[in-house]
Length: 143
Image (tube, rainbow, N blue to C red; front, side, top):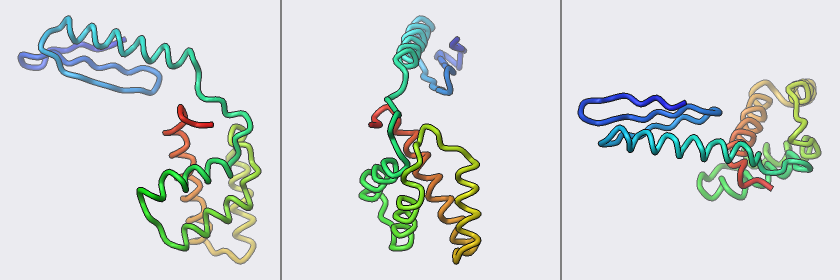
């Protein structure tokens, strides 16, 4: 349910629903209520349609998408590129839908017992987290 509050001479509508928070300021209370009702309906419609199909999407797919969409916007060096390709090679077969913390921890422990030091393992973990965060943000366009 939306919260409509008076702020000075204007009205502010605040909608918090399904982890989405939006607010807007209007001249009239009725405009604020109309906007809030419409936004809540859009959120409900989006939730009822569900998210994009994730069946079959692997970590490799997510890494490929991350590289193709983020690298042109934010250039990175050879080290990050090599880490992403290693993650793609080692973890690319994991199904994104069934990814667990236990898998990631096991991977990090395996890397730590090999030649990778703590800083390298941490970098790998940070890069994987970035890939997953970006995938979550772009989920409606996924697949």
